[in-house]
Length: 585
Image (cartoon, rainbow, N blue to C red; front, side, top):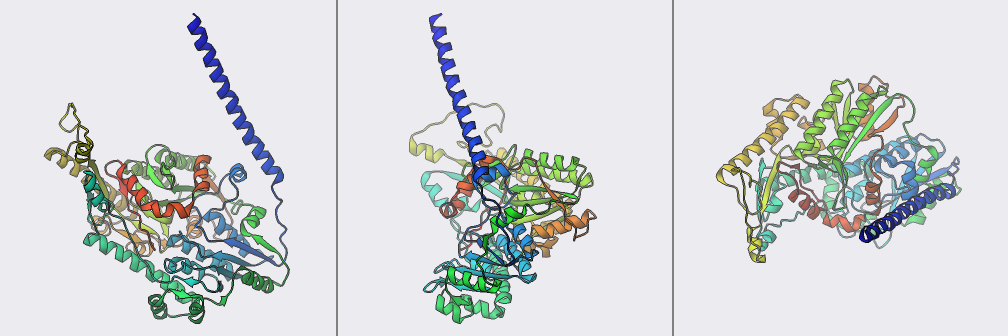
């Protein structure tokens, strides 16, 4: 009896401690929200000669804006959509005269650069000015993409004794076959077909001929887009831009002489010029503050649903990746989002924003079926592709009424990869022995301690054939293409958005705004009419996912991304619809 009393007392003490601890955490959160709301600065006063400022030295996250209480807790870190919407609102605001941006940081993918360039171009088309300044553009190299972004601005300042790393594009990819050999680990993977190169990082020591052909093709397409954009913006011929690239990198003085920049100087020089252009005064306001004062865009008129698929595709629910470099897309969450949007009588159309390299084949099929049900219910479905919509990311897009991608979006990769690791050599090195018992001839099909039996390997190969055939069938249905036409653009090959449009995999080129206009048209809403954008599922991304985004240091994790994606592939289920990362320098 005494022992039971002691245990009961212990449980009460422990339970009371955690109850009080939970109450304290909740109280602190509430106090933080109240204090944040109390001390939050009031919206800025927008004068008649306002100049907006923005820092574009770090890439912006895709996806929907956070809820208001999350903004208080995490700060007003803008998303790509936040930024583009704010630039669009400012472009039509007669009080805003221009925009000044700090430039020069890395980490931007080509599609995101193009979406930002389009926004700046639209801003300037309204008679506004847009100036940019930078400490440098990539130092001795790796500055081609960020300089491409800078050329959207009409006047550019570059710090003296700095440089522009306009040297072209280079793709470097790690191969860990040698490492696995030393460890005594064998990667027993296979793919459909030759351009499905994600497994090559595990099974090869260098690019295969198909791998090299695909990579060089992507670089050629992407570089051509960059050259055209720079040539048009800087009033040069494409031949002149290509010649300049082969002469790079450039010092500040050389860049000025080559008409790559307009002025030598820094922030103060660009701001002084902006003030003078705007008519004097000192009304400089951060774009994020301006956006908060104006409220969200698209909040009146007919309702269009927005569903975001950002990250690796997996079965079940989504959330933060265990590697803390990306969120994951939960098939259940996406299916629920489509059910909610489909059943909402106010929703006239759906814009499905995808930024995903793929993932689980089973989860991709679940999401595909949800998109098809929405279409059958009479909801026009328009896909907007972000930086990447490949493999499973293309699978879930295939049923859409219309697919929109930026010219630099990486998409396609219609294929499948799967397999397992054999660790018998590693086990021997470590002195580990294994034993087993089984019922069923193929119960050990995915065992890491037993190689495929002849019959098991035949079953595995048939499984890959079936997944690949199913993927192609979904594309043929959605795109209304003949099987032979799908096979011609499949085989696991990755395409840029520009190439994908030429191959019938994409309908239009552009960003979220283009997709929204097409959704309006499909729903019978005039293009000039405003609409109410409603995010589904209703609660949006989790607070934990946003905390991960908030604390992520891009400069630290960027070099690790290819290796972390290798871990994702290694832990993926058999028959994964995923594509390897293409890291451009």
